[in-house]
Image 1 (cartoon, rainbow, N blue to C red):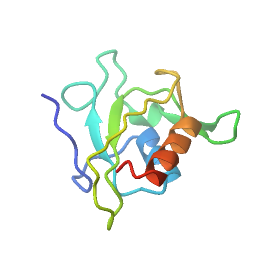
Image 2 (spheres, rainbow, N blue to C red):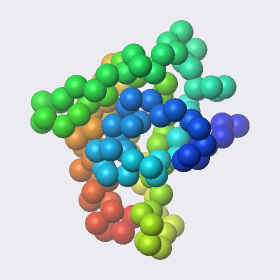
Image 3 (cartoon, helix red, strand yellow):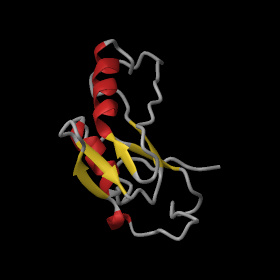
Image 4 (cartoon, one colour):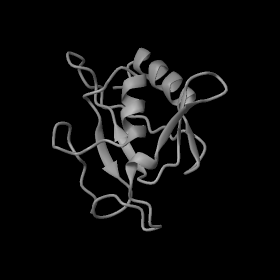
Length: 117
């Protein structure tokens, strides 16, 4: 079983996780679920989260490149918002080479506007 890493637990967010949360304005709210066992290091040998970089996509919004610690970032409802019990899973395209954030940000904003918390 893979355990979720709660905010303020001492976990060091990867460059990409930080950028995702910053882009949607939720820097301190993400709950990380690593997709690789143990400390989240890739069994392919990559273990340095500094290898991840952020570069603008064609739209000018950020893209995460060189992902070596794949994870799911759960974003809980904002403070003061009652959870509805609805959750969306959105996986930005691109794979390990590059994850595009423009669609993720647009979908997040849309889902929040219709009450998917």
